[in-house]
Image 1 (cartoon, rainbow, N blue to C red):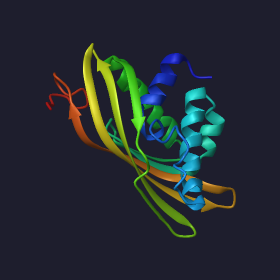
Image 2: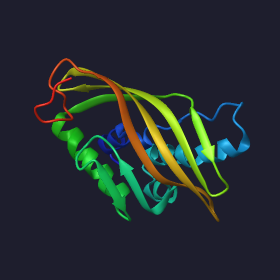
Image 3: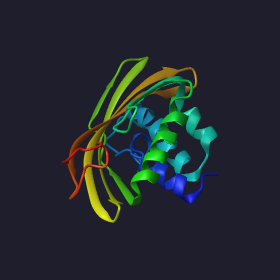
Image 4: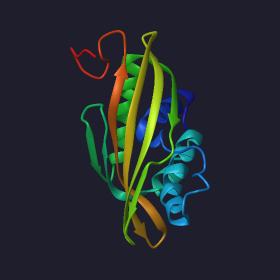
Length: 175
């Protein structure tokens, strides 16, 4: 099981945190619901600390792109390396009280073997006691396997950020 701090880091570390803690809208076609299922399951697994279930939602060799150095993780240890990088970053920058809200998945493009899904998100945190808010888009590619859809890649693309001090994501950066 993850400690409360690690669970908060996981929940805040977008790629997984992000996605759809609520069931897909009733208007979603069954195929679209199947595409969202591994994303939902990954989120729930991370929140509960079930790393085995979390890992089972991804292909063995994945790619993750996010805003924390080294910005890209790829290969069989990508998920663990990504979570470790975010954990270190969150601890160093003193992130607290992170809250994530996911929107309804906006785009589903799928063939019989591959899919592309986008999901808008917003988040708020306190960084050294100052409020940070962001809006972003999560982009997932999935692959249809013999055991169902699996996440092949995830990308976090920040759209907007509001922070009254130095940008915690960039050394020497500003808003």
